[in-house]
Image (cartoon, rainbow, N blue to C red; front, side, top):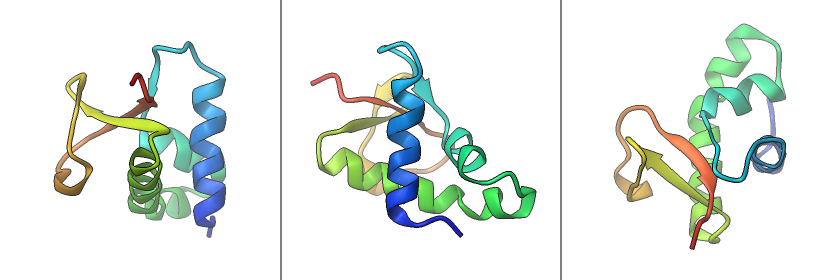
Length: 85
């Protein structure tokens, strides 16, 4: 299973490979870290946790419906994008 650091690096790498205004789905990160179907699904919550840590550090923003949301009360699908300050 991927480590916290690998997941955070996966988020950084995917965001760096996209337009500066683009966002990514946690499943993009999970699939980039492993090709095993069962394993990437198990990584979904750890990716969300990595995004929360990175948001707290000011690196990324977590959005739903294009709006930045409070990472402590997430429910449903999210997107991750670079922090726009």
